[in-house]
Length: 178
Image (tube, rainbow, N blue to C red; front, side, top):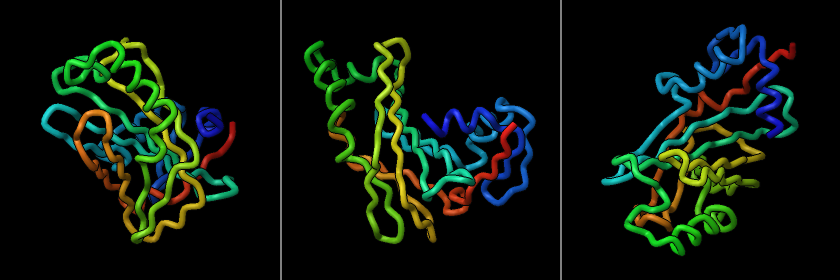
């Protein structure tokens, strides 16, 4: 949450080694949300799409940290939690898993080391949108090579999902307060 507030104060930002200036938060969001810039990557299975979005470290942070948003969507546009004709008790069980047990199945892998998230948040949407979102915060990162975000899917039987990010994206973003 602290990062979201900090980002909202953006006037001038330089990210991923490029000197890119942003005059508004709208411009910054457009840059981060453009898949061409490398901050968003996805993997498709037979029925689902797993999409990860990286928010890189910010200048002024006391430790190297980043946030990864994982979004899961069904290709047919149906409810993700009802995937596989899940009953209402199954949907409630899936919500509980996503809220309280998910951390054990997520990690970043850098240079053969596994880093577990220090925090996660599952955003409940009560079936109002055709995707589910989870946020993971990783701290004390030393990124010298490309990074793999790994999610072991326990809910939908998709197995190990790996999403890759270039090490260049982990350069600190330089943000000037307004």
